[in-house]
Amino acid sequence: MALAVGEDIFSQQRKLERSHNEHILPMLSELFESAGLSKQDIQVIGFGAGPGSFTGVRIAASVAQGIAMASQSKVVAMKGSEVLVRSAIEDKTLAGYGHSGKSTNWLALIPSRADAYYVSLYQQNGAELSVVIADQLLLEPADWVEALAADITAQGEHTLKIIGAMPSWMPKALESYRVGTPIPDARVMLDQVRQQFIEGTAKDAEYALPIYVDGDSPWRKTS
Image 1 (cartoon, rainbow, N blue to C red):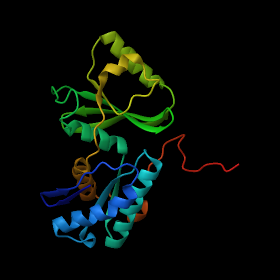
Image 2 (cartoon, one colour):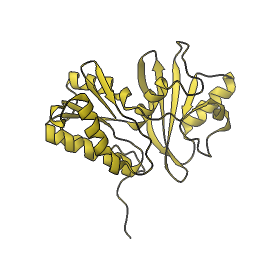
Image 3 (cartoon, one colour):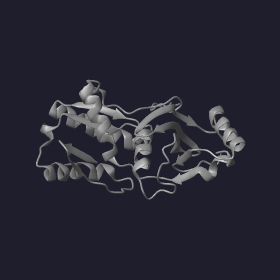
Image 4 (tube, one colour):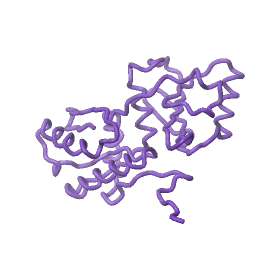
């Protein structure tokens, strides 16, 4: 998590295994204390809204919504895949770190359940990042994934970088383009959240909701 006060940035990062609900509020309190602020001083809150871990994104949305309501601040829901890609761009520990100035394609893979993955494609041009294929829940390669693999096979090289765990059904031609799995870094969200706040596109607290995609409804049949 990260907190921006003018040009000053305060952040905390911990790798937690299924215990986010126990640590998130104490970590937030420590963050605000280090910045000399209270939660009521917040103007806008950004959070990773998924798609991703069903429990994780609901915790993030609930905490963001609660603080936003208490502080009467705005919210910005960011896609988990975008946060992952932006974190990868800044992660010097990943294989293949560094950019030649050419356009780079980022394939983001986020596990859902069993062999189902959230898959998206982004294009990076310098500091600009745009969505080419929005998050899809896949159990097998979509046509565009197969086309990407065929293009790479034909060219022999590509500016593609793949982040996340590789599903068993991923085309073999793409396997060597995996550079690793970055740890999501909340600091990469700050500029985007601020920009939406300045542009007036940040939303009211009631819209701090998880992002779901086709085939991944939160509702389950009971019979």
